[in-house]
Length: 298
Length: 251
Image 1 (tube, rainbow over the protein chains, first blue to last red):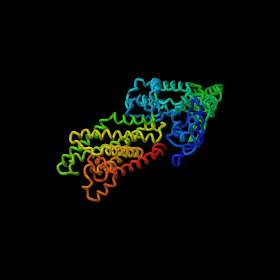
Image 2 (cartoon, rainbow over the protein chains, first blue to last red; image 1 turned 120 degrees about the vertical axis):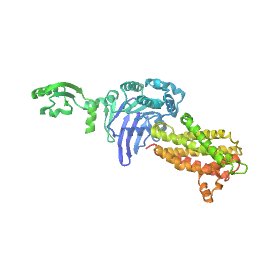
Image 3 (tube, one colour; image 1 turned 180 degrees about the vertical axis):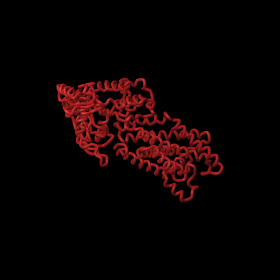
Image 4 (cartoon, rainbow over the protein chains, first blue to last red; image 1 turned 90 degrees about the vertical axis):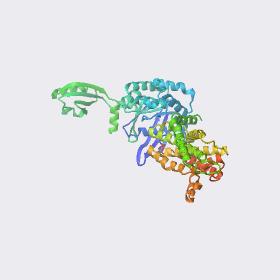
């Protein structure tokens, strides 16, 4: 039984079709990335899974439980970290987490887990602080803790690291990786593609409400052949003979796309011939961003 | 049932943590009404034989405070959660629509009862009220609190901004409570306005509640009880339907 099964899901808001027939299956224990530009439909898809929205047509199931007809079981098995920094201003972190677990039918027997979540997210010092008094970063931690309060086997994180400092990011990923090792299925949307690249084993890319790529991270990276060569040139001018390799320019730094590393020699020879001096040079492996840009542009 | 119990507990704590504002303030307001109106009218008005105006006024003020605070509890909880966005934490849970209803209604009734009883306790310094029919008092208090709690849920679901909620409160709840016979017997009104008052469900709640104390009222308490019960059932059905459909809560 897959952790998530999404079949032919359409969602319209009035005349606007946000999702145009999504099919997606995520196995238990996967660390899965959902990527796409703003407005691609990532959050809509997550909100449909969470029951915050209802599909116009199609079916979604969490661990085999339909999110509409069997919503109680589906929601019990799902934890969602919302994108917006929302909080209840009346209660402390610990109170809030206990309430949240309580809504899922859990009582004192769950307190040890709540303490574990608090500790692992670095909230111990703030456990008895009112949510209102927390800094932005601390609120983000509390938000993640709230999604974990009922120890859901499937966890969805919608942009969990937006505006988060390095320390928390590392702490968060260490904890999430541990949960994944212990068998939790993790689904992540992020704008930081290097996060998806290092953490996730499989990636779906969404564009205008459709899945435009769905593969293992490795296969996606292999899709972009060759390497990138970054050159800082003086004078800032690329010889015409190198124009076919040109990818982009930022200030006096040119990026060229190479099929293989051996081409570097050809590039340097051409530059020397044209009397252009290389001030700095960097050979870079293709990353998910290249795949992403390639797919989004096409 | 643990989920409902948790939400109920949270709704109680939510107002109790700020009880200065949610309990003490409305009691003070009711007390001010009591001081001013009884001072001005005590010598001039006697509504029922043998019942002083101050005594007449107290059950009305108790019920008015109870109704307004029951409404305030469910409506403010929902509108705050919606505006702050933290309502998602409730919508993500396995709680069923009727469980949300139950927790919000019972918490609203409790807040109404706490405020109503507090008004009574403070008023004891002025007048000791007779209690003719305790069961009627309890029935009207519970039904009135439930009715306004349900209305609060409806308003909380409907309103998207605080000023819409304020409009609901100022243009619907306030006029209906003030024109319900809290401060006067509707028999003192011209016959047209008497008829209009009969269309106001708040009138039946106040009059029935008051009947429970004095054994006298503007109309038969059986009629009041019927009207209030039916109104409560009707509003509850509407509220449950709204929650079930996910209107304005789930897109």
